Image (cartoon, rainbow over all chains, first blue to last red; front, side):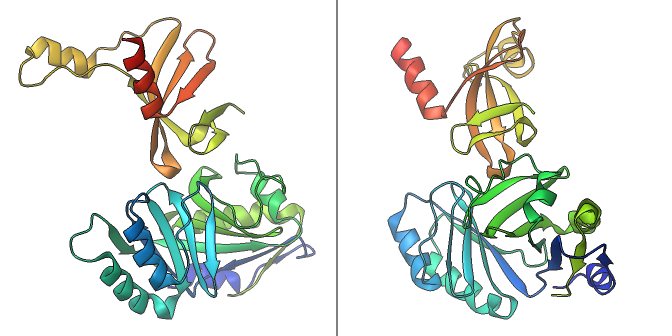
Length: 195
Length: 92
């Protein structure tokens, strides 16, 4: 669900050249939090058949196919993203795949987490101002995911492309983090694109 | 920037971690005295020197064990829970 306050900001902000970073809320992104045993092959298989991709089990990795992405969050925890309109369907199919007796859980967090898209030649520079991760292009490559802190707020960071990142943050921190990103981007110029 | 090496996630900033106190053996709550149980819950040896502690990497909810020096503030080693207790059993 789009955050009215962020959208209102999104309509007006172009700072400096606007060329350093492009900032947008991915308001049309649905998010599902999945928990389960990564050692259980039947579980990975059942989920894999629904999503048509294998859940990533290596720390800090992700898997993507079409408009569905699975992000590794913890050894037994994944964030699955899909178009917002597909959430009811995937939630139903995933619950069926989990079944009634398995020790696993699915929870929709589309409104609980906000996704920002941060792209542009200076995206890494802006993130590096507030994030302690090693963001060197050889270390944090496309496809990598990491839970960390950005400006003291807990985030999940996903590298989509060398200069394109998605930042997931709890909704209660979203307004703060958005303001911080606009401010941190001042040196390079920020273009806020309505999503 | 202080770095701690998480056995799962590799080197990360210390700000991502939470310390949960010394590793110590739990007495049997059904059999031990109140003093022993209170000691287990509330008393720490708090040595000046090497200490072995439970740590949590908060973003991934991952628990592990770290050995650090309380005098020099250096992190000497980090272990997975399995590694640590396998070593402890082998030493015992």
